[in-house]
Image (cartoon, rainbow, N blue to C red; front, side):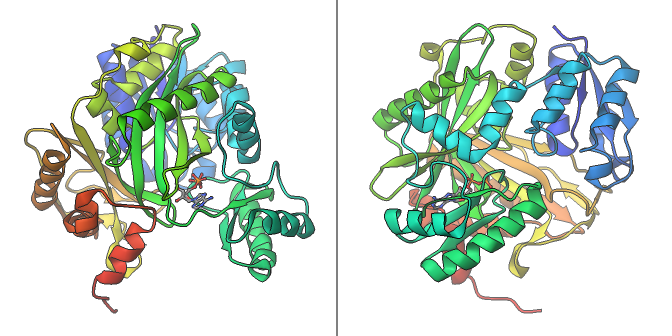
Length: 453
Ligand code: ADP
């Protein structure tokens, strides 16, 4: 087992990893930018190293600084968390060549799944259904036009290197395709330094359902069930739950086994997530694979009773998975609300600043994963998520009720948050009945009286 782990991240996920390390009696090193000096992860880690100024390119994404911090502190492994360098194959490679274990899959696996066009092809070859579309990246408009004519409009143009919902454009006809192709390529180039795009069929009212996978170095590969992530805005998730309120036991078994087969095709190691789109008729398609721990991993932890971060560390240290597929049991229901420093009534615009008062809700079945406290200033440089509320219950109604109570109890003063949005969503009859697709948020916000100013 490792003696010391450096956490190449910030915020709640840095705390989450510190806590897992503490349970395993592993020493921790926090890294922080000048904007994060007062952060809790810095206080709670055994050691900390300042790695540069606020902009991520000069701190959390700056590989030489992270490696130097690991060297001077004598860490033997690096946990990347999510975001930042977590899906950067180059970083994983540098870690290995400098003698640090990267807590995650190998660089080859990250590279393969990181290029969505290659991922699609790999999974299609493994027998998984993929959304009809281009076999690889597109070279020119003519290719896109021919393909779109074949699969039928509407189509969606996606960045091969995409992530976080960026670099995507929907086209309803040839004219929009020509326009969208240029925009998507430019957007992808600016955001990911890679212009490559591909096209696939646009599914009208899909559900986003993803499966948690876990592989070890001893040839074991299991799935831990699914998460329903259809509550999204601009392709960004806001609420997640497990199990999905619409998947049947037979579907879970079938898609779960397929996800395992796909991951086996690349010999997958450590935690990963396979995302699927389900259409209105229940047909499902592989969409992409994320090669890291996800923000929404706690809902899976709550229903399986497994600690995914400890499992990641153990597996990276060469230990076998702590359970086999037939030992995985799902009990109860869990739901997560992402609390962002955003003003949902004004287009979810960021609301950084000082939190003057913070009351953390509690009670049976409630978990709060957050790095903030009263007096903490949310910096404007990073992701706006300030915490996650996770409610667990013996069934969905109990979990939802506990979440409603938590959203009433929690107090965050000084900044705007997405708490009122979550209250609105949870009260909605469609949400209550589990009848949701990726357009749910749009519809919900239309119903709400507009605010001006
Ligand atoms: P990212 O890596 O940027 O998160 P994804 O490929 O995971 O991109 O897609 C994000 C979201 O975009 C999905 O959850 C879904 O809501 C929407 N989406 C992606 N592909 C399609 C498609 N073919 N049809 C309809 N919606 C799609």
